[in-house]
Image (cartoon, rainbow, N blue to C red; front, side, top):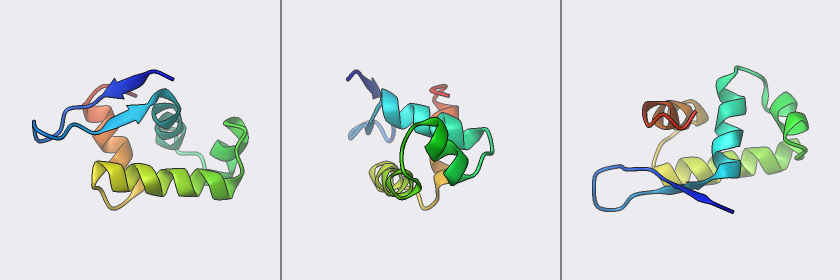
Length: 76
């Protein structure tokens, strides 16, 4: 699985997998987590867990902040 390097604060650059970027792209479309989970062939619970992990990794509070973070770096 290829990793996308995402710069933040210069020193410790978080990395998101292609799957993580794909998940954020689905959320960015405005669909519910249930719909996004179905499209990504995940359970809704797994999707929510992955979103929480992404948010923790990026040091943001909400999935929307994670989407904005990725959009600003032109990943989605």
